[in-house]
Length: 498
Image (cartoon, rainbow, N blue to C red; front, side):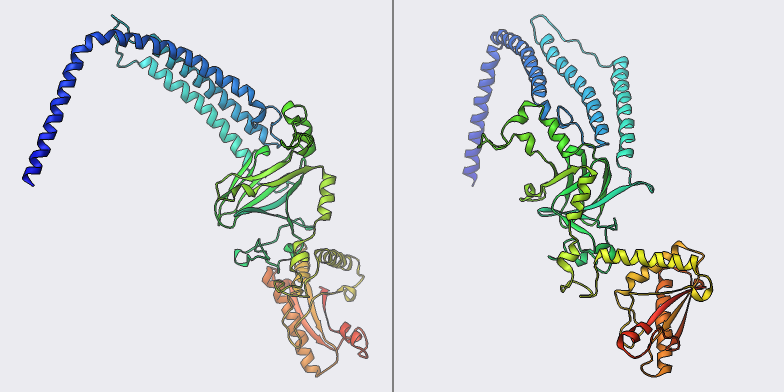
């Protein structure tokens, strides 16, 4: 081991001696290399100026050449109301940063040229200059203040949510690997509630089918919106981070698992109008399929798109969805062709919480309108208290029980809505049975059923002082007891205005 260490030391000593010799040799030649250094400085400084001209020239030429392909320029001006503000802010920032970019690069290469090493020239060192410090601190601070204030003002306007009196369409977009799931409200104009625990292959949004607002909701394969109409997009994610990106509308919002987000925008240019704008540019006259010279020109097949602006996985590219902006009439026609997901895929299946008991959204809407109109008519037009009675139809109870069926909630919610809108109304809920069975049992059951209806309304928020209940058993039939149809009419719940 000692011999090995001695050997290593001798090797290192030899290396040191060789390097010292090289340094000595270079030092002896240094005076002869000064001229070569001055020549190198001359060429580098002059070539730097040439590079500066070529570099800045290439920037301006390429910007001009590609201007019609960049968002905000040429045909690609914003197709949304707020998008114009965003484009303006980008242009303002571009001008300020562009001026600084050009001036600093000119200074960089000019100084490299002017102050390159020359014979008999010595550098002057300036350690501090208050005037310069103030100038290059104050000017950027003032410019940044203007940019930030303008940006915050635009942000507050662009990111504002829907106001109470706004007319708008609300849709939902849920990102998943690797697709966008799109949901529209149906005739009621409202999206139904959802629960992530209910998500399955047959229920991609996790919709709660006991919520009537879900029954007419539409699952769409593309986004279709009317021009000039404010749109609120609910944005969620089922798995990883995605980003809801509509580049032509300057819309971008992350879709975060467990944290719903939203974006509000108003499209201002239909797909057809945007295509016409593109048709005025030569590059959009090229065939849409490079392999087929006879294919349609690019402008004719253009579509707005929904993309994902996050790298969400290997299939990220497949998340593209077509977006179509159309006139209000075209949108109404498209909406008529869409079928509710519940009707098409859920009703009558194992996923239906009340298979066979659910009804279509159209039928529920008709029931609601008819029922509310009847209530208002009886309340305002009935001559005396005895005539101010309305039968509460479309509700039911389990056989021999006071437990309401699931379907009953639809009509009871309509009654709740009416009472909520008419705070001066007080009612009595009367329960009635047929004459089959023991009269005392029927009387008790009718009272319990009437009370179940009252309890439901009270649980929803109606003051208990406005709702009373009473059981009449079979004492007030409205038909004979000869047939099942007649007896069914006698089994009823009535609303009496007090």
